[in-house]
Structure formats: structure tokens, C-alpha cells
Length: 120
Image (cartoon, rainbow, N blue to C red):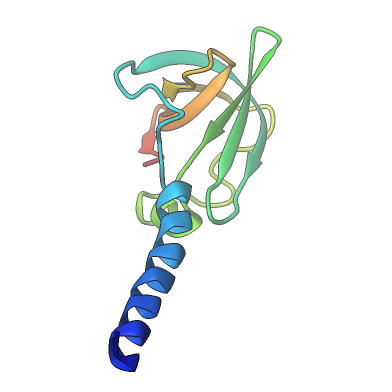
């Protein structure tokens, strides 16, 4: 094998190694996207952070941790750091975790004033 071919193969293998972790990070396999559920609860915490924001909701004494999109994408959908705060009563739609644990991927939130925002 020539040096050029060897370097080309090494470069290709290196690129595959870089792409695989990125693809794994963007997997949504842990969420059951065949089931869109809804519930109401009280906001315990809202973490406005990258790469994903999180909403923690108290639903009848059970904490639901809900993954959201990036702050950039949520801003485009009308969200701000101050959109929800601890103590707010909200309604949500979400894709549940496949494990059955409380939480999932937040799809929408309906704010106390009635406005509905998309989280994805």
C-alpha cells in the first residue's frame, strides 16, 4: 500500500472516530416517541444551559426531569431564561423515558397565562 493510501485510510478512520460520539450524543433512543403524554405540575427548577436545557417539574410529589433543546433553539421559539420559574404551574406534553422513570423529552409547555411554547 502506498503512503498516500495509508494516510487516506488513517484520515477516514479518524473522521469516523470523531463523528461517532456526536451521533451518539444526538440519539433520542431513550425517549419513546410513539407516546406523546401530557400532565400538569409545578416547576421546581429550570436550567437554561447548553447543550440542552432542563425543566424539573413536581407532579403530585414526583419529580419529572424533562430535557429541552439548546438555549439558542429555544430562544428562537420564544423562550427566555425568565419564561418559567420555580413555583409556576404549567401543563406539558412530552415523550416519556423508555425506562418508565418520571421524565422525558419536553415537547411543549403551557404557561400560567395560557401561552404554549415548543421546547423542540
